[in-house]
Image 1 (spheres, rainbow, N blue to C red):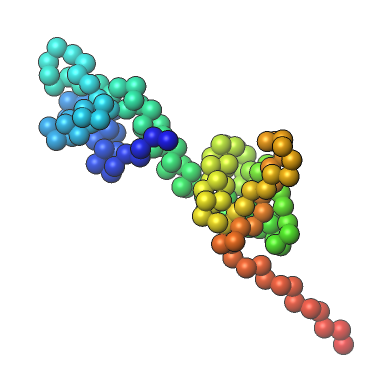
Image 2 (image 1 turned 60 degrees about the vertical axis):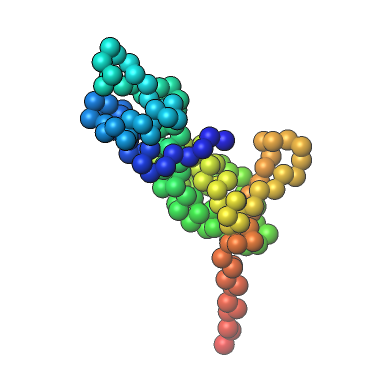
Length: 152
């Protein structure tokens, strides 16, 4: 997996994408030393974002979007998985958070991050990759037991 950008690199790369001529010498050095920009013209102040830099920006934007979606996915998943035995497929969670608002990949990436945190767990019952189920993980909040009804 690619190394995440530092905050300095993120700011400089987004500036380079807008107007590379306004980069400071320190920003140029920081980006050029890792191959995110290159000299594009005759003058040494003409810089362009490289393919590597463009891919890094796309990855960073994807990380930001998944971080935004993760809270909504957590709420929907824990609402659907209302008991410790409950299992569901990713599609039910995707539909609960809104198929028009969030892409399938964003929801799956958020679910994978929640799995890494222990909030969700993935269960593969067969050798088929299309039959992966999700359940509550060890770090998920405890499920409230139902209160018994009193009969008078």
